[in-house]
Image (cartoon, rainbow, N blue to C red):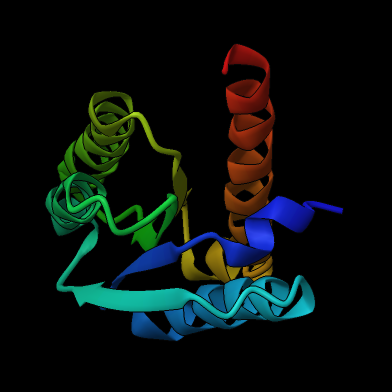
Amino acid sequence: MFEGARKARFAIVVSRFNKEIVDALLESAQGIFSRYEIANVVTYWVPGAFEIPLMAKRLAKSGRFDALLCLGAVIRGETAHFEHVATQAASGILQSSLDSDIPIIFSVLTTENVEQARARKQEGARGALSAIEMVHQLQQVANICD
């Protein structure tokens, strides 16, 4: 399954903010890449979720990667800051994917509290699987279009 993706190159962009949560996301993502015997995975760290889109855009434009996975955790606080960070991170990641024409997977948790974030640590695995599947599907489309 997803045989062609084995040779693909992946980057993971990880936010340091809410590190305990994000470390669990990263561990679950790495488990999927390992399970599918994908060895070409590089991790890049950024300060927070707001900085993810710029790093994703630069990595995508480099031409070195077939897909990117973005991991972070934005947890609601007492101010509107949550909405701004979450919205801009999602928007920036989507725009970077569309502009670069490579899959950039949004696995940034947006939760009401830490407990909800801890319960969703497998989102990293789901994101990694999405990245692998998108590379595979785009390879299939390329084969049809060539």
